[in-house]
Structure formats: C-alpha cells, structure tokens
Length: 174
Image (cartoon, rainbow, N blue to C red; front, side):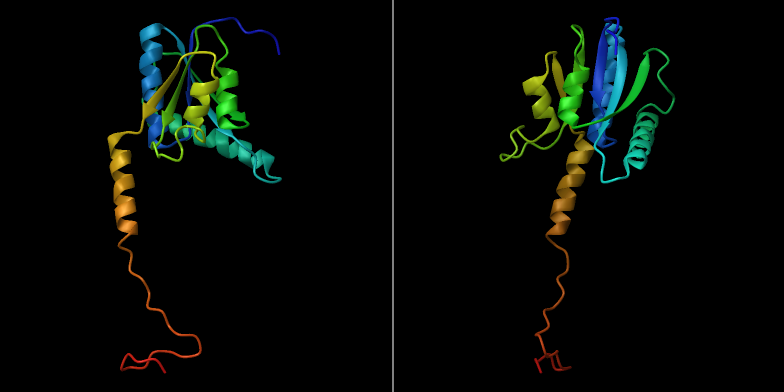
C-alpha cells in the first residue's frame, strides 16, 4: 500500500452502542470545527470459519450505526466508513497515524478493576501517537445500566425443590 496524502482526519471508533454514537457525533463536531475528514471505523474480529459472514455483518453494523447517528447525512463534513478486521485498540491506533489525526473513542464505566487496562479507550490513550479524546457514555445509557442492575437484584427466584421429592399441597416436602 502506498503512502497516503496527509490531510487532517478525525477517526472515531464505532460499535453501534449509544456511547459510540455519542463519540461519532463528537467526531463530527470536531471535523466540522477543524475542516477534517470524519472516518468512522468499526473493528471486527472473525469468529470461527465464517470470515465472509463476519465481514458482511460488520459492514452492515457500521452502515446501521452511521445511519442512526446521521439519518439526514452530513453535507458539511466528508465522511468515510471503514470496517477493519483485528483487535479494536490496536487497529484504531494503527489507523490514526497522521500528524494531524485525532482519535475519538467512547469510554464505558470506570470500574476500579478496569482502570482502562482492559478497555479499548485505555489502550488507545496509552498507545496512540496522536491526540485521543474519550467521550463518556450518554446520561441515558448510564441510567439504563443502573435500572438493569437494580432490576436484576429483584428478579423472582423459583422455589427449590428437594431431589427425589416434591412439595405437597400443604407445602411440606414429601
């Protein structure tokens, strides 16, 4: 592959989550502000022998995310979509190789056990040779996560039936 002509790019990691769509919107703002090209990147890893199907699913997911983020398109910002095979952090860092590139990624919850060392955003911050902007999850996504955790604690529990027996109508084990 030959050298590309250097131009300012805003590269955004996209997964289709609300957080990545927020990052895509932030990337569009940055591209508009700086006159850069917006590059939306979905990184995928093959699963088993279904390489072609995985590639097609990744391209479809990227198209869906871009359509959801920008239903009316972006007339004022050049937009490119890439579906790249590999590990997310390493692939994004490799793509953001220009002197004027900016890499934007969504960041998830900040759990004490993660501290960025397992996350894509943490990898990008530590390894990228260009500025990296991490965009927090939208408030709605944080609230939905809290509700999901709260509701998970209140799920009904099925009664335990002793092995080899059952429960009689009186409620006593047989």
